[in-house]
Length: 397
Length: 224
Image (cartoon, rainbow over all chains, first blue to last red; front, side, top):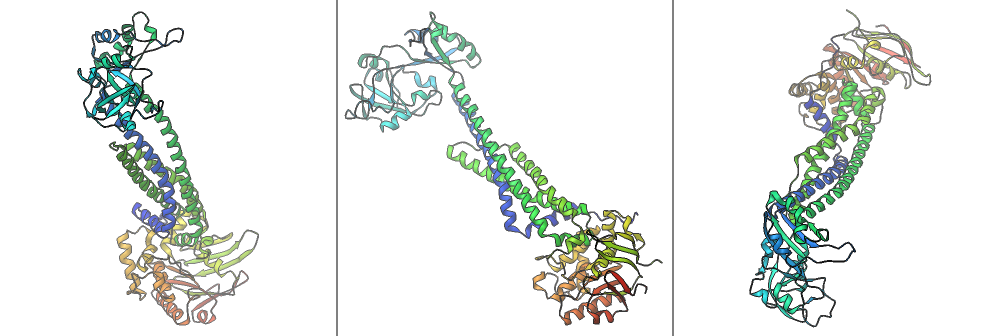
């Protein structure tokens, strides 16, 4: 019969009916939306923080350059430590695409102390290193205070401290520290060097003074070489043979920017784990929404009966409760996206990064809440629609 | 012109075999004002649920406005309720926190009427039942009699030819009850068919026709 066609419920009416259902129980709505919000916030924050950190690393690498190569002595076939030839620095410099070379040489069995009263052995792990005076521009490091060694100070008992070593010794420029068996004057402090973190906990002295006063053998232990960006891999291949032509296998060549990138990759594994935890929280939130909706259907049998008496079809009742579940989880999703963004911004600010929250993460979060909302609302909505009108109306109001 | 309600040998049996209504024959014409009376458990509510299409007879036929209810789909039955039947319940069934205006407007929610028109018509109907000053009152701000008038307004807003009232005065004091009865009578004079379930004999006796039920059977008044 054509004239018995139920009226259509407009989307606006459907949303209004769903919202009215939520408004009637605000505390319960907030609590169950909170479950969803926590899950979404966790996932958005994990993605946001790792993206921000990666963006910061990329910026850092761009500033520092990825064309720095490191050459160091390895071990020979018998597992004995070897050293690089003294002339290896000059030989590396002769490779065509190499634009800058510098070197440091570890000074073994010499330690640095704040005063001569500190018992020997309490070195704080600070290594004494002989450095060439062109080290800083080559590794892309900067002075925090004072100056670096120059041709003059390299001859005398002067020392430049890496960032961590300076902090450990509590040293300021102009102060004296007890190095080996005599006092050295601190002439400069370094900022942390991301591409050569081994220098952060080092005390750098001039090459000549190390030989003269500290028994330095003059062998470089690390050669730093900058190459033209496009030829870095080619240079990397020939470095070992250039540094020690007679035994290239005894030379270790590395690219410090690779180490930073590898560390980032390791962080990615942790991110996946945290993301999984966020997903579990989200799932638990979905169960909370389903629970709220089931209870809601039980409590509102009278309302369901009334709506059926007013002419609501089963389909319209189902849509009403599905809409409610969707609005409920959508509310949580929005709150979670906001919270996750705030956490990212907060964390990035404390780390001095600029915060990056990818749009796909926010959209993905909202899609996830919609899916959760539908899944959580489906069963209660079907139950509500199946309720016989007479049974619903006879429920206590 | 056919009768508005036609029941032929309608039986309603619940799970477990209890027959709440047996072989009921009842014809109610357009514009009648009918009381359905009987002790509790006599099948009054079952009869009203069947006539209101909230339930279907286990056997026998029911025709509302010429439509055989047993052969209609859920959508069609729902449309039938939305267009032709208004319900008034003993417990009012007003949602807490919803104003009188919006409660009444919800009476048209499932009839495909746009929201603005629903609200205009709701205000009209509330004036009609004497609650023109109570549009923005919520249920807890209204007296029992006023709540029942809101419920009646909600049932009336779609101009249904049939109004079913299940103990409409059951929760009201006698003064409020008399007011509600006067309202239902005035609707009858305007042409609406009104069925009132009651166990108040005074109320029933004052109505032009009484259908008496006992133990699931219609004892008297099956034909006008």
